[in-house]
Length: 89
Image 1 (cartoon, helix red, strand yellow):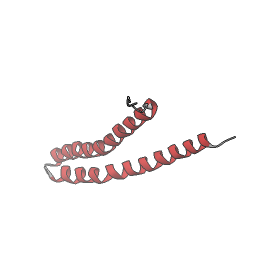
Image 2 (cartoon, rainbow, N blue to C red; image 1 turned 180 degrees about the vertical axis):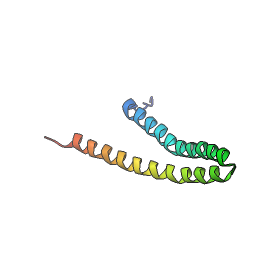
Image 3 (tube, rainbow, N blue to C red; image 1 turned 90 degrees about the vertical axis):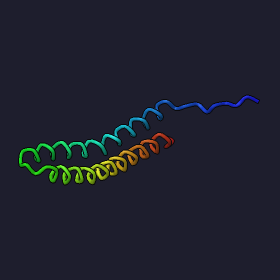
Image 4 (cartoon, one colour; image 1 turned 120 degrees about the horizontal axis):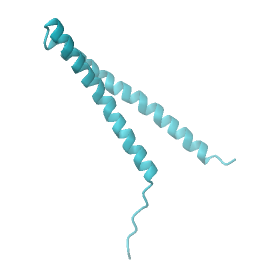
């Protein structure tokens, strides 16, 4: 008895990959921006590494908050659009 692989919904797979990539960037970019800005300010005010550490920590806190808000709104929109597709007219 040959086993059948389930068919892949490529649209859904690409959407999930895109969500993952955006989510990763939403975590990484605030941290890197805080680090870069902190490094520039530390060099300007000769306070290395104080401002870099503070801004990197702020980026580490802000990144997940941004990600959470984005995921909640995106999933809500996705669920509403799927419900609209399933409604009989």
